[in-house]
Image (cartoon, rainbow, N blue to C red):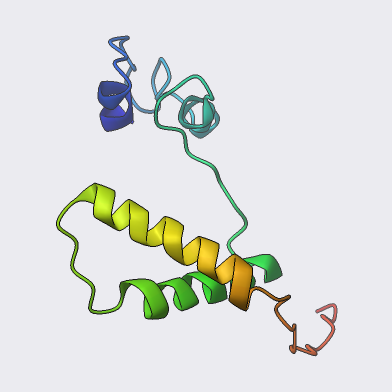
Length: 109
């Protein structure tokens, strides 16, 4: 919380955890971290969601094909490599991921 506030240039007193201010409750802390006006904003996603598997697959492809054993002289060089790979992927490799998990339905306890 304090790091986010510092990096966002927020000088307000955050309070004391479980006593007062932004730090008083978990709900207040979450609201502060999700504030869209901050330079740094947390976005909470479900821990177990089928679409996350597909995102992980894409990042695995990116890592293996564009970043593995790579060395970059600058952040700009890294950025350009990522942009070039995304353009290549979209033009040549992009296709829907095939969802193969048949799964078993959840049963009540």
